[in-house]
Amino acid sequence: MADENSYDPLEHFEASRAKLGEALEHAAGISGGAIGIEHTGRQNRSLMVFSKMIAHGMSIEAVLGPFPSDGHRGGFLNHFSLIALARTVYDAALMTLYVAHLSSTEDQWNLRRHVLYLHDLCNRKRFLKPLTKIEPAVQPIDNSTYQRVRDDLTLKISLYGRKLGKNDKEISELCTGQRVFVDGARGAARLVGWDLNAYDFKQAFFSNWVHSHPVSFLRANEQKISMVEASDHQLAVSALALDTAWEATDACNEVMSNFVGTIERDPLGPIE
Image (cartoon, rainbow, N blue to C red; front, top):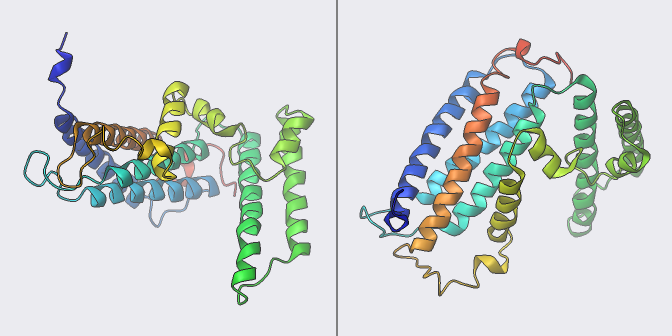
């Protein structure tokens, strides 16, 4: 058994950073290889989220820059932004795998996509309504068009939901426009085969840096947070973030390499 005191957070950090670089290179090859090729609506949507995930990963590399600048710990390790970006990689990976789930039936995809459309419609109204009050040049929402589109979406959600055995309460919840994933984020994580304990931990832990909640700053003194020489804590949480990013990217690479590249790879065929 290895001596637990032999753990070197800088070594872990550097190894994890290298793995992320390799995973991103593979991902970029998959994404680039799909350019100019006809795909189904589902493939195109998964490719868009996959590209977002890659961009987040590339931003991690940019944020890290030349650290460590002296081969040890010197230089600014921006673990704040790194952890926030790792969370965005993780979220984008979940959506990529959810959309590209190879075992989905046609009814399942139809329900999922209409729930996504409804969330998009309702969320756009939610931020555009106050925007029109501070930016008069912005066109206000056409309520009659909004209601017509919403009614059409909720009708389809009800139709596909009932075909899949959803009860009235579940369908009513799906029709609120608040849901992104049909069975919630944990349901999506379960669907794509992620460990739910790991998912719960990462979502709860990383969100503190996204929202600047207390966990991200209250213990700065005892964690020896430094802007010139990274502490063990900074290196350890950074390595955790990098591990999360490269593992999520690897999981997407495995699925996307078999899902895109030709339209025939979508087993559901040309659905929007």
